[in-house]
Image (cartoon, one colour):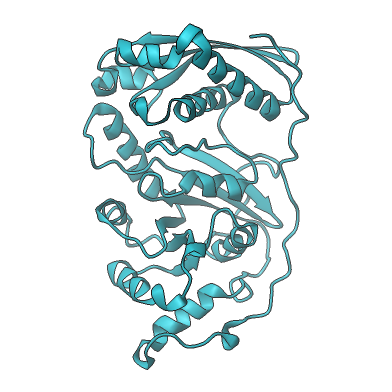
Amino acid sequence: MQPSTGTTAPKYMTSGKKPPKKSAAAAEPTVVPPQDDALEAMLAKAMTSRANNAPPAEGQRCGLIAIVGKPNVGKSTLLNALVGQKISITSRKAQTTRHRITGMRTIGPTQYVFVDTPGFQTRHGNALNRSLNKTVVGAVNDVDLIVFVVEAGQFNQADAKVLSLLPANTPAILLANKFDLIHRRADIAPWLKEMQERHNFAEFVPMSANNAKDVNRLFGICDKYLPEQPWMYGADELTDRSERFMAAEIVREKLFRLTGDELPYTSTVIIDKFEQEGELRRIAATIVVERDGHKGMIIGEKGEKLKRIGTEARHELEALTGGKVFIEIWVKVRSGWADDEARVKTFGYE
C-alpha cells in the first residue's frame, strides 16, 4: 500500500449555544391517567426544550460525565455526536468499545468531559471481559454525572446489571435512545414509571443520538450538574487519546466491519510502530487472533480482505490527521490470549 495525500483535517469545534425554544408542553395531549400527573409532568418536561435547564453562566464549569449501558446500545455513537468528531469506533459487533475513551466539548463557559465505557459483559468471564468490566465500575465511581443509555421502551437483564452498578450519591440521567421509533407517548409512560421505580433518576431524556437537535439539548440538561471550576483541557481539545491509540482502534473497527459476525470478538490490534516524518506517519500494526482459521478469514483470498482493511484504515487516518499515512498490517495467532491476565495487560487493557 502506497501513501496518498490526506484530506484537510476537520474543523473540530463549534461555538455558542442555540437560543432556547418556547415550551410546547401545553399543546400536548394528556395520554396517561389522572393519577399519574407526576409522570405526565416528567414526560412533558423531557419532551420540551432545555429552556428551564440552563444554569447561570457564572465563570467556568467543568465536570466528568460517564456514558454507560449494555453492549451495542449506542454509547459510542452518542459520544461521537457530543464531541462533534469521531473518537470512538463503532460497529454492529458487541464489545466494540474496549477502553475508557474520554472526549471533550467546550461550549461557552462550560467544558463537558465525556467518558465512554465498554458495555458491561455478563456472558463471558474471561480475563479480557473482567478487565473491561473493571473499567466500567471505575468510571461510574469517579464522575460528576452518569448518563445511563437504554433503548426507549426496553429493559432486560443486561440493562439491569449496568443499572445495579450506579452509585446512589451520583446524579444519573436516564437517556432513552432511539426515541424516534416510539410513535405514541402513551407507549412510553408505563415503561418510564417502571424505570423511575428501579432507580431515582435525576432526569429523563428521550432522544436519538443521530439527531443534532437532541444532542444539543443534552448539553443544556447536563450543565447544571457540573461544578464551577477551571477547565481540565484546552478549549479546542477533543480527546485525551493519542494518534497511536486511534490508529489501533480504526484498524480494529475496519476489521470488525469487514469480517462481520464470523470473526470472534476476541480479535485485537496492536501498534508495533508509529513514526512521524513531517506530515507522513509510518504505522506497523498486528492483528491478533486466537486460531489459524481466523487468520485466513482476515487475510482473505490472495490477501484481498487484509488489503481492504489497510486501505480503509489508511483513508480514515489521513482524514483524521490531515497528512499522509503508510500502514503495514500483519496477522498473528496467539491462542487463548483473551483468558491470559498477563497477555491482556501486555496488549494494553487495564
